Image 1 (spheres, rainbow, N blue to C red):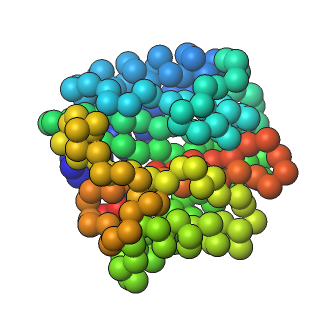
Image 2 (spheres, helix red, strand yellow):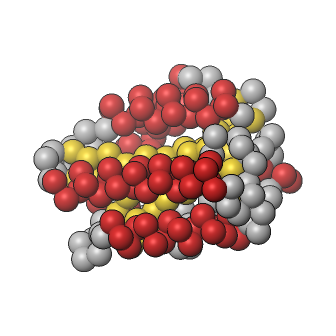
Image 3 (cartoon, helix red, strand yellow):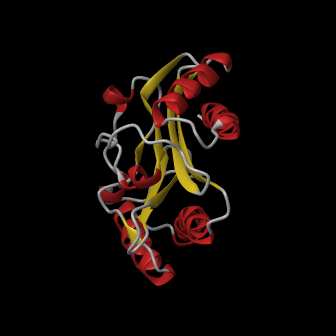
Length: 202
């Protein structure tokens, strides 16, 4: 599982370095597929998502609005789920172009909020339900709005559908290390963009 996760992060970093202003969201997605193929992933287990601008507010199941072009001062996130050595990797992060300080703060806040929630999981041994209650409270204190329809999930040996253990945010037990994905999606309180970060609780 850790190998699959490490490879997913490697793919995200490689793709993020190649995404440039002027690129269409669909072009970035296609580029991501090439990056994954070059890293010899076995298969994609969930659709590769790349969201630009206002589409960063969309949840996983929502379609992007149109096919936006990434601008010089913009925000985007990547969400990858691929299989390596029979195990599911799943990771996501937000990046910015240009120098808009509010967008940069939003991208950083998603990772900071993830870190805060993961630390509570490690130190307090709380159940999944409590993790997302705490995440909502912390997001509010930080000045952001947490999307509570995104609640994390179990990862496992492929295929995910057979081994699915439900959503982390609905899990009424302490989530074990190395098996659960903590997902954080936040929105700017007044501007049309947000940020996303997810990783394995480990």
